Length: 213
Image (cartoon, rainbow, N blue to C red; front, top):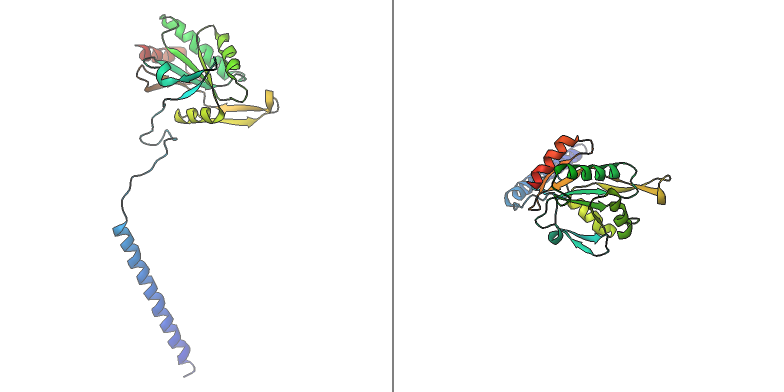
């Protein structure tokens, strides 16, 4: 009898364990049957996600210190939009210079399309600093800045990466990494295409012709 007691207890334990497994299986099946179907939530911050659209109405601060409302100021206007900063050593001045040159090559004057420059360094780029900077290119450029929260929100809605990076060699001890592509928008305010930093002038000019047509 001494050897049968442990065996009996083991048998009971096995029965209990199998009962629990069975109950768990039934509960799981029930959850699958009654679980409500909901919409799939995707992040609109990721341009790779279905349904993502680049661009949204925004309000920043113009170089004159006044609010700049894109829905009003850019209504019916094709425009090229670039995110950069005034302490940028090469990419930013080269890109804005290229846009100024290409607009001249269109032969439709300075009003052919708007060039919009948004600073991703609002800590240093005050409205006056941005205004003085865009005047260096000898053609009308809309220079914009704002609070760090405002700029971050606009960059996010336009799928532009931007991040402050420590750099002892840069003024203020930091630089800013940012997306270098130019965003092109048609007269209806909808995103059309991009111009890459390394893109040749001819295909870039063809894209600009399409948004001003």
